[in-house]
Length: 476
Figure (spheres, helix red, strand yellow):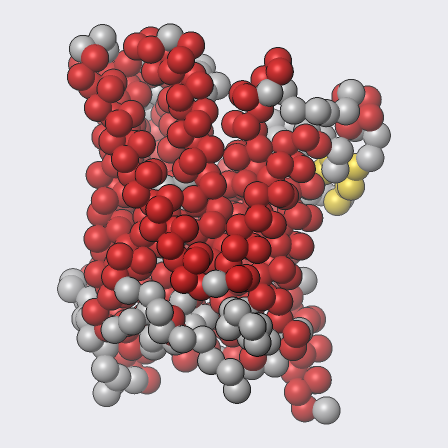
């Protein structure tokens, strides 16, 4: 059977982590989070807590990745931990929700920010009456409008297919593109933070002063903290992508843990500094009403030129993040297909380019569907919710793996075992339960037209009969 070659070193590994993590959320979510919390100190705490918990997860993933340095990431890990059914369910979830929703959501933001450079800051679109003339309704879950914001959706689909094509032609080209975009994204955020702090036009009191309407009730603060955590977790997510291409990393026992930890620590530092820069320029009440928080912050210093600059930075960031997700995520479908747990054509290696081209195009096709039915917030919230269900199981799986594979060449052993995995499991369980509770309550109260978490669970459940279909095919 044809195998993928180990061509990616430590710089590519770090850049894949940084490129997968730093995307559009840091330019989109802080305003929403500020409105949910009403306190700059709580907002800072959310970024720190989400970063630390994500770091715990990456450390757990590093040990597992070193013990099982194979292409397929958590799909392969879950097969060793829980068996074929659970591994398949994760692989299916990655394809139908986690990875493709992430790719589509980020590409969607690329489309939205590209509007800045068009006349009237608007891509071609249908009148509202036509946009709402075609819809898909799922009872008790929500309604989807396919023609809504069609210009943005066309751009989003185009960027998905462009980067899929690049990765079809060469693993090295995809890795080189990722290194390039990751360096530029880090430089752009450093520039953004530097311009704001060195301008001297902000106020340090904004970093601690809460909104006059801040609710001091403990239960409200707790639920608001969990709700805001969704935005921060979305911003940090992507650290697990490196494991998907473990079979293509040189010296995986060294480069997988180093790539994960170094990459995520750099992302955490940049996020905290960027969030504090926003607050430095505007109090939390002003920040929560900002539709484009980074642009509004720079406008105070650079005027209209700042808005154009931040739009360009977001395009740069989302382009790189789209590529960084397309490169590793297709490997899940590839691994499943090679084991005959998915459609066989998706597991073939392109004879000319030695890449999983069919898996890449299959991923792009489903990503197109999600772009047509979704929006940035819906897609990102859905993938984060489903992702953290599996993250909890992955953390529990490290206990199983140490018993099943005591003689494995780990190369890296988790510090703080078993305390850190227990903390991670408790956090992920709490997050999933509270998010589901909040989503259902908002739908019942009429505050939302879609139960995002339930919709994600339904898509995951569709994979159950497919598992038995492929299993039956194997036995026939």
